[in-house]
Amino acid sequence: MEAAIRARGLTKRFGARSAVEDVTFDVPVGEVFGFLGPNGAGKTTTVRVLSTLVRPTAGTAEVAGIPVSEESGAEIRNQISVMTETPGLYLRLTVFDNLEYFAGLYGIPPRDARERILAALDAVGMAGRLGDRAGALSKGLRQRVALARALLPDPRVLFLDEPTSGLDPVATREVRELIDGLRDRGVTVFLTTHRLEEAERLCDRIAILNTTLRIVGTPADLRRTLFSPALEVSTVAPITDPGELFASVRGVDGWDSTGSASYRVSVHQPMAVAPDLARAIVASGVGLVHLSEATHSLEDVYLQLVRDDVEAAR
Amino acid sequence: MNARVRAVLRKELREFRRNKLVVGTMAALPVIFVALPLTSVLAVKAGTPLLAIKGVVGGAGLGLFLVPLLLPTIVAGYAVVGEREQGTLEPVLSTPVRREELLIGKALAAIVPTVAIAYALFTLFVIVVRLFAVPEVLTLVWRPAQVVAIVLFTPLLVAFSIWVGLAISVRSSDVRVAQQLATLAVLPMAGLLALFTFRVVSPNVMTAIVGAVLLLVIDVGAWRVVSGLFDRERLLTRYGGP
Image (tube, rainbow over all chains, first blue to last red):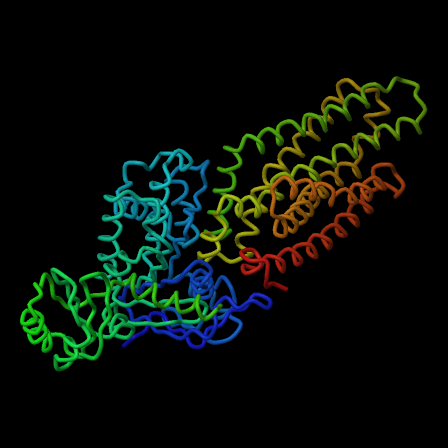
């Protein structure tokens, strides 16, 4: 598996404060990798280290196969593109002037620049706003121009910081489709976001950071790691003696009440236990309303981890 | 000039053109700096003692030198801190542009208009003096040493002023503070120039050339300091750098 990004024990301290501590992960080529974490968790610092804007205090990293170092900075930045959280446009200049400047900084020959600018703007639905002054655009449109700017150099690795922040639902959907399209073209996308549903929908794998790397994996892996399998049960009326009833079913490991007539039943094999559990409830004379395998969203995973950190810090 | 330096230069000039504060200052200051010296030299009457005329012409010469010294600080003071304020610094630093390319592009954007303005003002000054001033004034103004000094000193003073402005801009967090500090920081150079314009140092072609070489050495030193200060990590965080 060829890695587009490789971090080993990456650490960044600012004075006595540790922003990122001993972070290790790989991002294969062509993967959309979600990087989640609360404010101040070290996400931006990690991106800045990988894009050679700040030096790591310890550890090593490779981006696009090039070791991150002072000397390789320009070489790495030639292979990547970074879309920062704020659009960072020159508000007095037109959309075209903004992109033409960055085309120049990326070394795109002037004869190709116009075509590349038009293609990038077209990809974000902004081809018609070429001559508009950036300062006259709404926040969402500026965000789209910033995304077009990130696409301009045709990068091998694209770092996106909150790319859909400030966008309306239609534009958000277009951006998500764009990211899917980038994956299809083999571009590696390193996506920093607070939108958990967006990360779940777009990302092949997800990392949750809170100074240290708390977990990495596919959304399904993350759920499996943090939550044991369970069945959710709702009945018409409360079960008289739920402890006795659930204990009588083979394969049940424990239970919790989640409401006046609803329960979470821990099991190892939900599919095997569910029929016996249903029969036992019906046999007890209580009407069964609902029985299903418990599902956990990425939000549950995220909150579980972050809550653990908050409690550990107390 | 490589493509990235050209891109920075073109962008900077476009931005300046659309920035009313920069355009206004670049237009107003030169008018003041040429009007005051002209007024003083045109007020000199025939028969005024030579020592007094030398004093007036010396002051006028110093006034003309203030244009290349002070004008670039307006632009250079804005150069980095202005980018930081509008959030464009990080996207720019994330590109393959090298710090030398960025600094040279920004410096050229300040040098080109300022040197052009300074030369134009001196030409205007000489023409007006030739047409309307008493001959004694013209004799002192239109001297080879004076012309050589203006031609050589102007770009070197502009460069010095820009490096000082950039150095302050790199460390500052507010555009106006950066511009004011840069203006203050270049004033000691005016003192050195006064030695020349007021003839404390013998004003001949050789001293003008020696002065230019000295300025060049100062410029190279200032460039190295600015280049060292321009550290990506320091610009984005308050840490890092030399």
